[in-house]
Length: 202
Image 1 (cartoon, rainbow, N blue to C red):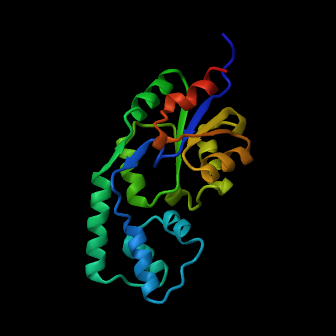
Image 2: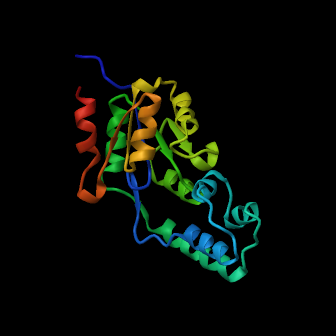
């Protein structure tokens, strides 16, 4: 048997392993309100939200604002809707289990706000490494977040295959660090197996 080309597979989460039906996007609602208060949107606003480990009030306070009670209640309702309607794609959990059974180390690497990441982690089976932006304090494609799970896996970049649905964060970023990477087109009906097979059979 030939030597395996990879020791580990790393996955993006949302749009790759998990989807949210009809997301209410409460954080976008918060940013819209902040804009109405006269705050100019910043290019790194989304990255800031996903790299802070805290609730809506914590994030708003960090940005220098206090959310009105009715808006906070509405955002929390939206959040509960999203968490309730979050589920793994049909092939995600079976594929992760199969890869584990084949001896691959597995990691997830995701730009996510705290409640979304925590809920997603509870849906998926236990894996070997987790690089959540809100825990690392950095977002893809910052090399810091990739190195975070590489250290947990004790793998070199060239030993890891990265799968995700966003070109910059899930392909360009990992490749720049030396990993192999491939995009998955869930909206076109592509499965994890479709993406993985050509790489893992080399």
